[in-house]
Every structure is written in C-alpha cells, then in structure tokens.
Length: 355
Ligand SMILES: Nc1ncnc2c1ncn2[C@@H]1O[C@H](COP(=O)(O)OP(=O)(O)OP(=O)(O)O)[C@@H](O)[C@H]1O
Image 1 (cartoon, helix red, strand yellow):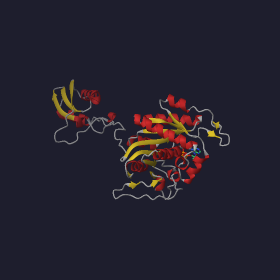
Image 2 (cartoon, protein in one colour):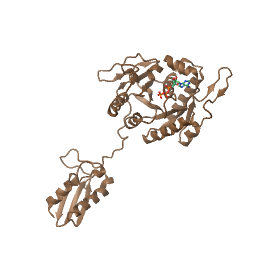
Image 3 (cartoon, helix red, strand yellow):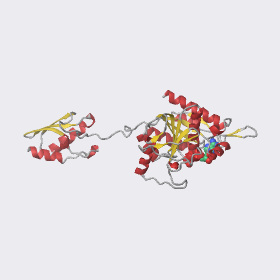
C-alpha cells in the first residue's frame, strides 16, 4: 500500500456523523505503512469518540486494501499548533451559562398560560421582598407584552446608558427596574422579534444592566408560555429558581405541567407554584368563595415534586392599584392579597436559603 494513497483516503474521510467538519487526516499524528499493515495514531482527547474513530479508520483503510490496522490515540496537543481540532464539539448547551452581574439571587416568574396574573405576582413579589428590607430589582422580560412599567407607575422613566453601554435601571417604589416597555417609542408599538434580535436584546437585558448597588433579589417577569425567551434564558443565565403562576382552573393547570417540564429541560429549579385568583372573600359577609371550583394545584405541585407557595385571592384592589402603578403590597398593608404575597415571599426566601 502506498503511503500517499493512505493519506489521500484519510483526507477524504469526513467525520460529519459526530458533527465535526474535519477529516480523519486532520486528527492524524503518526502513520506507518508496512506492506498492507497500517499503524496510525489519532489525536482525540475524549475517550467518548475512540470507538467510533477506531471503527471508522479500520473500515476506511480496509476498503483500500489494508489487512491489519492498528489505531492508537493521543490526547497530547500537537507541537507548534495552538489549537488542535477537537472532535467532540457536542457541548452541553448549559455550560456557557453566566451569573447575572450584581445580583445575589435570580428568580424567574413564569406562567404556562397568558392572563393568569403572572406580572401582578412578579411585581408584588418584588414589592414584598423590598418591604422585608431587601434590595430588589425587577426585570420585565415579557418581550411581547411588557406590563411592568404600568404596574410600577414607571411609564415615564427615562433609561440612560453608562459610557460602557450599560443601561442604568431606574427606580420605582424603591425597586430597581428595567423593561423593554421603557425602550419602545410608544406603548402601542407591537414588537415582532426575530430569533437573533430577540437573543441579542435578551442577552443585553440580562447582562448589560447597571443595577446600582448589589441586589439581593432580581425578579424576572417572563412572557407566558414555553417559548424562545425561556429557552434562551435557560441557556445563557444562571437562574436560582422559577416560580410558576397559575389560576385554579384545569386548563391553566395543564399548562403548569408543561411549564414545569420545560424548566426541568432547561435545568432551572422550580421553587414552587403560586395560585392566583384562588378565591374571593365577600366583603359584606366575609364568606370565602372558590369561584373556579376546588383547587387541584397542590396535587399537581406534589405530583411534580414541587410545592404550592401560596394562594392569592381575587381582590379588586389588586387590579385597581396595579392600574394606578402601585403594587397592592405597598399600597394597602391590610389587604388580604398583601398578606398572601408576604407569605409567598417568606416561603420563597426560605426555599432559596435551603438550596
Ligand atoms: N389577584 C388578583 N385580583 C384581582 N385582579 C387581579 C389579580 N391578579 C391579577 N389581576 C388582574 O388581572 C389582569 C391580568 O394580570 P397580569 O397582567 O398580571 O397577567 P399576566 O399573566 O401577566 O398577563 P400576560 O399574559 O399578559 O403577561 C390585570 O388587570 C391584573 O390587575
């Protein structure tokens, strides 16, 4: 067998099956051909691919007449070459996750379905943590329908950037906040995000905001559902936990299950579920009504190995103060919803401290 024939053949053997763009020849570190016997040393730092490369090499060389093929591997980088080709580029997509700078604990607030009160819960949780004396940030990552500025009475806040292009988070009710809503020309501007633009904007939102002093908690208000934003978040940022908001109806709970599964897939721990609009207490009689029927949220939480963090009543004050731009937790200390939000915040802190 001719040495040049062997080399040519190795050059023409691609390794696309393991997702790399180079050939067997690129991995070759030594080659000896004696008659029909071939000895070859291949560079492969990962044992994971040894069997595949051995079989591929034997098959390739036997197809041009080799009788014995001896394959050896080395993990030593070639001399004078800075970066040897690495065969296994099948990276863990979560490996490159970074911590959000200037924040101790990051909590994502999500919902499987729109309209269940996710933003209301996110804003009031932020307010409850603030009320407990923590420094808190609120990031409205609901890129398609940001309601954070309205709920925090911050629609007119101006966002300025530092010389190194970090967006300075304005403050509302003592909570540092940022929302795509503050950067759009008008509230009615529809936002159509194309994949790469969304990714870039979200990355900037996550990593290029100047929160001022270090935050104890950052609450991220996600869009409803299980889409691009959630996946991008899971792949780029280290999130300490997710809180899923639901209402008691079965249709909402189906989406909670999907939400939990998605967070498991993107490896974000689910801290618990908040059931919003759980019940209504008649102000005249004090009688409690479960308007949407008996809740099964606790069962679902147990089934999926998480817990119910609390039940928030339907209370007109929640919506009224929200529309006025003040979270009910800060506006009305004695409201039932305020008590419920404070309890959820306590449970949240406890669970995070156990992590
Ligand atoms: N516990 C509550 N009691 C009374 N009204 C509430 C309660 N929770 C939410 N609401 C009201 O319900 C409406 C929807 O709430 P919110 O915008 O928080 O939902 P969302 O799940 O974030 O919606 P989206 O899907 O648009 O992101 C708002 O008008 C809000 O004030």
